[in-house]
Image (cartoon, rainbow over the protein chains, first blue to last red):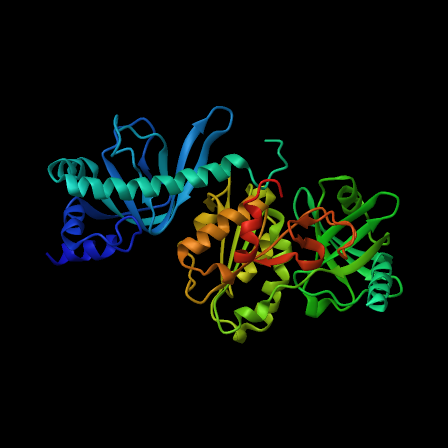
Length: 157
Length: 284
């Protein structure tokens, strides 16, 4: 019970879970576990089944894709407080990108299948979580717009 | 009234005459940015302050507005400008060598209200070549460290090769909070990738009190101001530095007009809540 409490306290610090009720937090935390990974390790690989996601507590994770003639290209990095992975939520539940640890990571790893089941059983929880992840995705989309705009470039790209 | 107008015109005429400055040092910052240190050949312009700019004239080529990027308490009469080689004049400036002479007019414009941040957290957000105009604030803050609470420097660049002042950022990072990100990077980069606004939510400052100074491309400043406000910073504590086509520097020619304001005269530093409505008008 005490470790469950600890996990509740950890995840509520993330903007995605901040403000959730205690019951909702416990439901979410019930699908999570603490993990630690070293630099260079992979969290997941593009194309694989996406049944997990991560709340980064410390360290840095790189989201990457392979570009012919350029190799692995980092699209974005995620640090403390950020969520890594949303493909667990959206069919066909396959990773769109690969994720690699850049700086040793401590994170909460969530079992996406477990959480999907809970969301189906408790639609209120599903709605709240979907709203939160939609907000997170909107932030990523806004950031992607800025990257596409190449605001520091001379317009040549 | 007539006398005042005559005096204003006379002062403006004086401000239109460039003074000769010699390039005494030149430092390459990255593939397309150089820092020039200029010293007066004879007479010096009035002391320049953080946020202000000069018009740098390459004889026979043209004139451009460039903000000061130096440590103003250390430089004395010398001027420090970091310049990106993007056009005819800036290419000529960046191609100049120690010993060459350029013309200098100014200083023009208003200054960063650094005192607003005294006793508070100071947050500096630079994007691309927006970092040089902010560097005098950081120098000032580090020199007068006790005047501020936390000092946070956030910097975003296009790629690792485009970052400016990397050694200095590392040195600042030992004294204050510095965070850097790039929009795109290859395998060789082990730092953060993503837009500069991503640095704002986790940055260690108190949004209730922080005073924020932002420089970068206009669209970057819009996104950044929005992210700061989302974090809880009041719009009146967000300051930005604007750039338009400054020509005369003294509010006569109108080239840098933005609605009711002339950036060379009334700016380039603006409070966000006063500037934002103007940026929402596409025709401006």
